[in-house]
Amino acid sequence: MRRIGLFVILMCAGHVAWSANLEWFTDAQAAQEKAKREHKLVLLDFTGSDWCGWCMRLKAEVFDTSEFAEFAQSRLIAVEVDFPHHKSLSTVQHEANARLAHVYHIAGYPTIILLNGDGQQVGRMGYVHGGPAAFIARLERPTKTREPVQQPAAPEPEPPRKPFVWTPPPPPVPIHYGPLALKGISGPKDRRMVLINNASMMTGETAKVRAEDKEVVVVCKEIRADSVLITCNGKPMELRLGNR
Image (cartoon, rainbow, N blue to C red; front, side, top):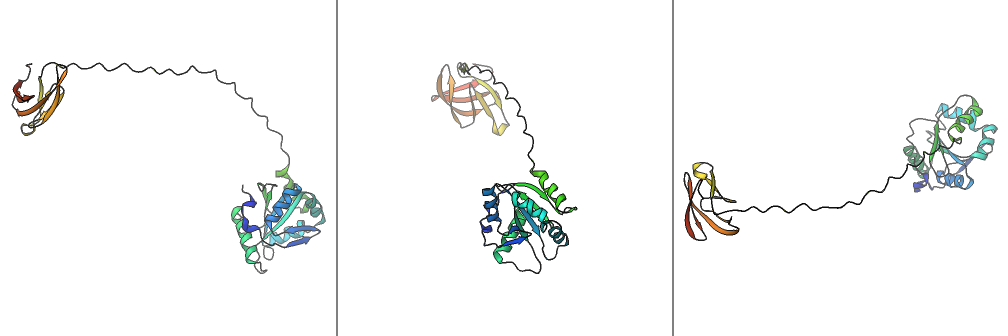
């Protein structure tokens, strides 16, 4: 549902036609404003007035009758949205009608759209057999007051939840490293790597290693089959697998 008031282009100098003492607007914006002031509905008649047979029948059988005029004068503001083949329209009017047809997805003629005072669509219909009485009955169907819908009882509020108390995790247990020890040798012969306490190194690499609760500087000099030659804080040492 859309509001006609959004389309400024509809503010055109549309003429007003009269049929069976019923006023027909071609300016949809002006019609919408009048309907809001007078608490009426807007009837948009999308028609091909000079070529559409069913449109001509609807006009002759319903819109041109005094019965429909009497009903419409107290309930409706009527708007003709015409798409003629032979009659000429102004460029502004043609564009305004085309925009309305686009907004309401008009695919055939005649199509009748009903809007409330706020421009919201409340009904849609086409040609109705049976003259003004049948048309008025069909017109009133979507606008009758509906029975009020009983609202469900509001759910009971949830009991208050206990405030969340964040408990920090215990601090990590520090790892104690003893004297420097060769814990493993891995890798192919030309890319061997050793694990000394907490540090992994290849030949030529230097690392800070934890040993007896302090940090020492270890340089890996040579990796052998089951041992490694290093310097620890500049002092040369050999560490063997399984020995401390």
